[in-house]
Image (cartoon, rainbow, N blue to C red):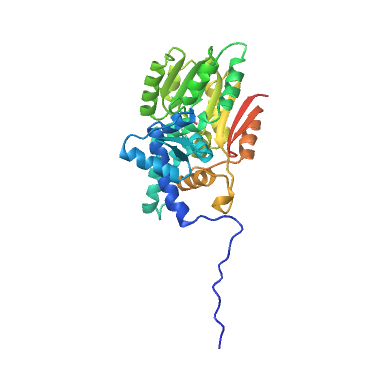
Length: 335
Ligand SMILES: C[S@@+](CC[C@H](N)C(=O)[O-])C[C@H]1O[C@@H](n2cnc3c(N)ncnc32)[C@H](O)[C@@H]1O
């Protein structure tokens, strides 16, 4: 007679996802983005309450209460501590739920493909990135203060500027600086230009559509720019992609340095590669960021790889501002 082998459930030392996390997390993400589109998070973070006026709004509010993000008092809703955290970080939710969803959806038909070309919702990614950036006003303040302290005001270019959210914030901090923003998504640039006109910023800020990837032939937009006037070159959350499509980080930076011979400051924000076997061992968003880039074939780079490229080209780090563990903004000057 053989003893029955007991069923052994091995418990891993790290937390694992449950089926509940998967299903309810997806629904919570949809509710968070809808509430953002209705302006709820901005209202709540501004210290005000929200009062749902329709059945749909009521259902979303109740869902957000059940998730632990809101609390109801009489007919109005307030933020909980977790709700505050969610509201502040809603850009990450928008990026995953709306911005990158078309790419993740394509996985189903891509089992035999090497990569899935990124199919994003550009307007959603732009808004998500600007919302992510706005969480940390002290990072803008640090960059803006460095620009505003220049003896002679110059021109700051944002390479891959999306909806120009960062340029708008910096223009307010450095009132004598001129700004240029360039992005490959013409529609996003058109909409942002309309917004800038409404803000009365078009005399100091110019947005252009085109690619900022250095190639053998310079891009057409460069002919419309006073290249010698550019003194600060910034790029946020794009260098990793250009470096992986091209010949690495140093090659892209070298191309920009050739375009703008008088550039004396670089501001580079990007996500660093942090790897771990278990999803839950990494800070939130890092696994999503890593998986999204792995399936699109866009390489992510480590801190050491960024810093080796900076040093190779003679740039010294003057400030390093870490945001959410993996998102790092580095201010560099020619050493
Ligand atoms: C992840 S988003 C970052 C947006 C913005 N820099 C920020 O951090 O808020 C990347 C941006 O780069 C733009 N982009 C992608 N490839 C580009 C290229 N070759 N030239 C210019 N812009 C590009 C996208 O349209 C998108 O707006």
